[in-house]
Image (tube, rainbow, N blue to C red; front, side, top):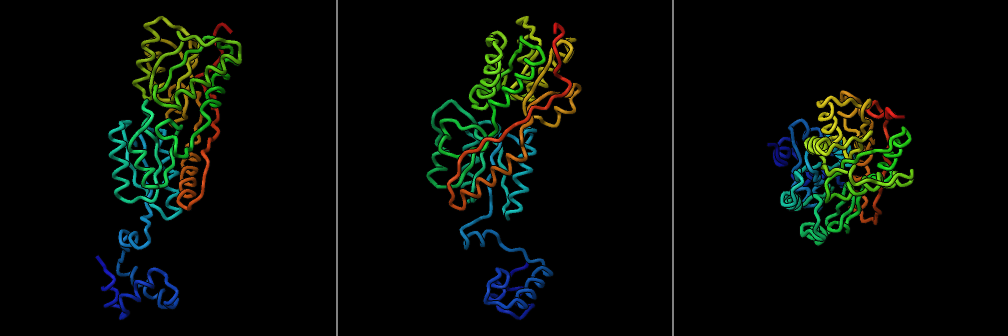
Length: 337
C-alpha cells in the first residue's frame, strides 16, 4: 500500500507538503498540487478514510437499515439512495433486519459504532410504545430519517412515506366504479401503521360509495407471497366469493392469485385483483396486476435529501409522496355487471 512517505521519497517534497496538496490546502501552489496529485494517482495512493474521518469528524457514511435486500420494494429505493449519496460524496452501509426487533437493535448499534454521519431506517414495527434503541439514537444526536409511517416508539424522528390512505382509497374506488360491491380485503401486518392506513383507505372508499364494510370480507394476511396464499385458502375454506380482492401489497396479491388460479378461478373473469406497490413482477405476472405505483426512486432521493438537511443543522418536516394507481388486466367489471 502506497503511503505519503513513499510519495515524498519519489517526489522530493516533504510529507507535510504532500498531505496539504492532496487535501487541496491553499498554501500549496496549484502547479505543485497538480504534480503531487498526478504522482499519487500514478503510484496508486488511496487516502485513509478513517484517518480523514478523525480529522474532519465526518466518516462520509450513511447507515441504511431495511427489512431485507430480497424484498423487491426496496431494490429501487436502495438504488436511489446509493446514487444520490454517491453524488454527495457519501458511501452507504446497508443492514437488513429481517423484521426482527433484536436484529434491528444489533444493526443500529453496529452502525453507530462505525460513527455513520446519519441513518436511514425502515423500522421494525412493534406494538410497544417505546424501543430502547431509538432512544439511544436520539441520545447520541445522530441525524436519522425514517422511511415509512411513524409509530409511537419512533415518533420523534422525521419520516418520508407515501399517501397510503389516499392511494388505497383510489384503488378501492377503481373497483367500485367497475361495478364491484363485494370487495374482499387482505390486510398487511397488524403492527405496521402503513397497513392500517391502507385498510382505512379501503373502508373510506366503501362508505363514500354507500357500501358498509363487511368484516366477513376482511382477511388477515401480511406482506409475503406465503401470506397471500394462506389468506386465499382461508377465504376459500370459508366459502367466501367476492367479485374483487384488494390487498395491502403486491406480494400478497400474487400469492392469493396463484392459489385462486390453481383452483380454476379466473382473473379477472371470476374475480378482479388489485395489489399495492408496483414491484417489477406485478407488470409481468401471468395476469398483469392492477396496483398502486409507489414512487420508490423519489422516496429514496427524498430520504437522502431530508437526512442531508438534518446533517446541515436544518429543521425538517415529515413528508408524504403521492402514489399513482396503475390499471392493468387483473381488474375488470364483474360478470353480473
